[in-house]
Length: 426
Image (tube, rainbow, N blue to C red; front, top):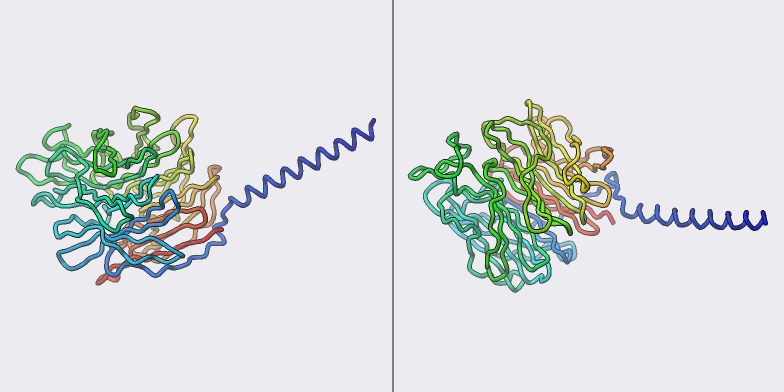
């Protein structure tokens, strides 16, 4: 009997060990070692341009959109996608001589979730003579970008004021979710809009910048336009994720005391939450830092990266979302001591990869780091040399099942173009 018990125990332990090894092996396949990072540069489809943006469709196809500088008065919104590790011949979405082209407020492109032939793209187009009087125009294609329909404006206010810093994401219901900064209440009648006006005293003339949202379908029909926050920072990027359980939007907020920390709102079923702070950095600054946050999700998991310079101590932080408390955990600092921000982030099964701009001497470098929820992190690696100037823009990062894609602006002071590369980790 003892021999039978010993035999049974031995078999059970062997099976458990074998199963454990299989589990470890499976997990190891999902682990990405940033120490094995190898950058594969791609021939850029951009001639003379900037403001790049990356998008990965639900089918795993990689798209790059950018503004091509046609001449001194005309710009064009272009796009390309990767086929066999090569960018396809660029296609034009739209062009104009009355666009608002800004290094930080760049156009974007998204593909509908259930139909890859349906594509939406946005750009900013001036409405009146004021410097910041412009609208968000959206054009759509039903044939994978071969032809584009007439553009429509996503905000319904009709006010000649600032509208921009758009985030668009495809939804399961064949609609596109959008969120943006809306200046309909900032305009004082007869005066030009100015950023960070100290006349803010609520909605009406001279009021604050707001955060708004709406959805639209391929026919351009608008749904559910709503204000999400009535007073926010004037010119920092928005960011958003859609998980199986919720939609979450993050942005730089603005208190009446000029505290400009990162806040978020979330929608679980039908209603949006009130704004909540990601973390109380208490960064008091009288002007907009033009440095928005970045969100990423992996199924129901969410992470955020952001820049702050509270108490004149610049930092790049990352925080992981806690689904149990429906808020973000204590931040993890990842920079090397002198960051400029301009962050990006992608989230995997058990870690995040974050990108940011770090000042090194009189120049800058695009940095990458791997960060785990237990606060462990990889050593920092340098993606590319860059510049501290606005011309260097906001580096972009996206992921597919087997690679990370990067895009960033390169400028020699005379000409700007876009560099692209990928790291294949599988």
